[in-house]
Image (cartoon, rainbow, N blue to C red; front, side):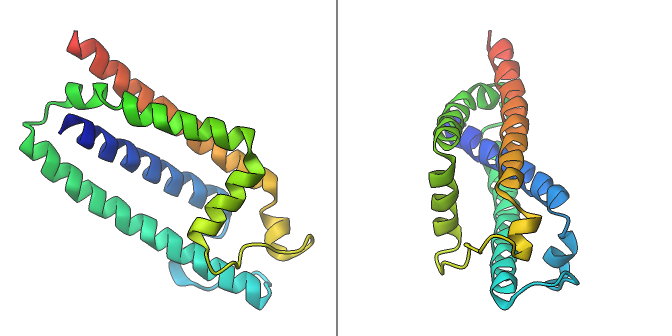
Length: 167
């Protein structure tokens, strides 16, 4: 049970970190609130942004659902936080392995993630379009590094707290 809770907690940390960093970096947080933008975009770009908004809305719903699940699971285990924190090393190790793969094969990883989250295929645009200009590959690299670093540090601190409390 503690490993399950640790995994749920880790996923929650990752999703919240991703949500906060992505919104702060994107510069179009109004679009995520209203679905409208004053930035000039083609129909394909607007459709893609609507798809991004839908994914973002799904992430928010997932965060709320995981908070509820986490609360229920914690209640059922008498809130033994140090055991849960200690067991976060497992999802952290999986996360680090996935990130290592993504950093070795960034183009493949970018393409794979977009195929998963945008199966309708509206995620490639010619050079010079508004979206490519606003969000070049360096944007996604920076986003990846910030989410990776923040998630790893927060989770690592919790693992260390769990480890030292366990002994």
